[in-house]
Amino acid sequence: MTSPELACVYASLILADEDIPISVESIEQLLNASQITVEKYWIELFAQYFATHDIRDLVKLTSLGGAPATIANEQRNDNEENSKEEEEDEDEELALDMDVLFDF
Image (cartoon, rainbow, N blue to C red):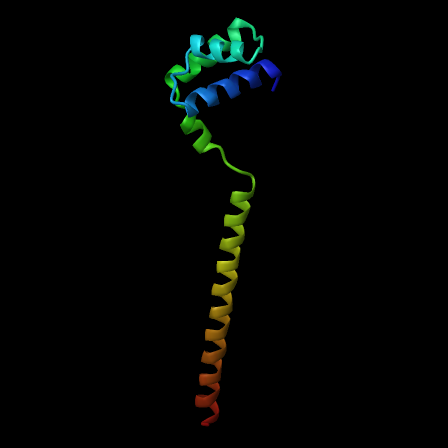
């Protein structure tokens, strides 16, 4: 991501955090106050996009890299526990079968 894009992203996030509507004017004001010069089309592009999309939803949908692996590990651990329980049940059943077989 280039710095004009990044500047517009940060400006949009700041505006959303302050509950200020994301528009061409508000992005320009924020960038001017920060003494950042960005070509006008970048500002218009971001303002048009966020006119129809909520930036908060975009942030919420962003996934962290570690989360899916954690879920997969938990599922694997659950499967291992279930298989251990099944093995224990099978061992108990075999022991009962031996009792019947040899009349203990």
